[in-house]
Image 1 (cartoon, helix red, strand yellow):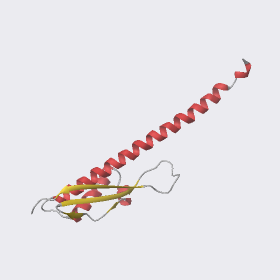
Image 2 (image 1 turned 90 degrees about the vertical axis):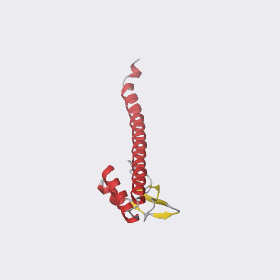
Image 3 (image 1 turned 30 degrees about the vertical axis):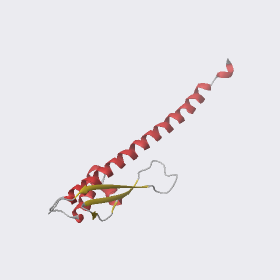
Image 4 (image 1 turned 45 degrees about the horizontal axis):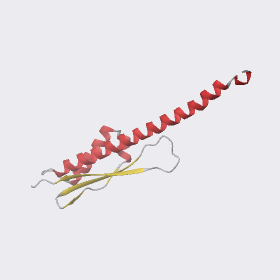
Length: 123
């Protein structure tokens, strides 16, 4: 059994690499889903705010950015692009495009686009 000396250290290193890799993948997935959910909620909130009878599309954009800054960070909100809200057939649409935070950037920046909709109130 003298040939087995030191094999525990090798096993530990090999298993540790796999565990750290698995943790990184799960953490990245959770971070991506959290960011997407926050952006969807902010876009929907901005659309609802802009659909109020006494509000307009400019206020919808500002409210969306405020919600992103409040739920994530102000620096992330500055990197997010909120397209000018549109009103079509009584539906206010807010479209947000923002970078996806990545642990490792093996490719270029990945951007995510989400939309929020709300029925416009009559004036």
